[in-house]
Amino acid sequence: MPQTQLTSLATFFLRVALGLMFLAHSLILKLFVFTLSGTAQFFETIGMAGWLAYVVFPAEVVAGVLLVLGIQTRWVALATVPILAGATWAHSGNGWMFGYENGGWEYPAYLTLLAVAQGMLGDGAFALNRSLSLTDITKFSQKDAVQ
Image 1 (cartoon, helix red, strand yellow):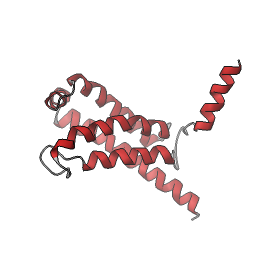
Image 2: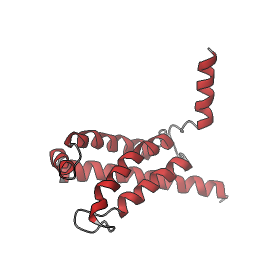
Image 3: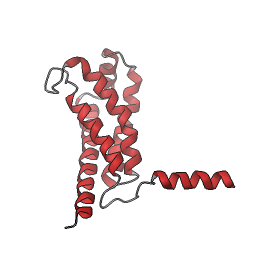
Image 4: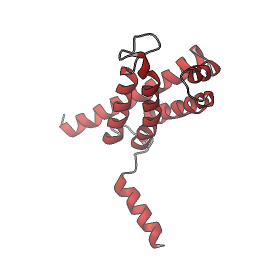
């Protein structure tokens, strides 16, 4: 198999794994294990506004679905970086290892880097709606400016 096909397949695997992680973390952990109100209470205990839980939850669900399906992957992955960076910050006081009480910062930092890598790599194989490139966006904005 040529390297370009291997890269496309590896990018697809990363995309699906990242999407499934978002779905599991939002639906299973935040909704079913902690509940949304419990997640909001946790946010408050670490100094964040509780209402952010009600923003983060659907953002993670939507991002997970879009990543698994390969819909505008580059931009969806990059849009999740602030959420993941926030999770890294939220767990930073608990030490490095995520297995520590209340979880350390290693896993959210790792996921942040994976989302950045996904944004850099793009869609991979089997994407339903390929991401617009920066070149495409520039062309659209220049076209609008002329009209």
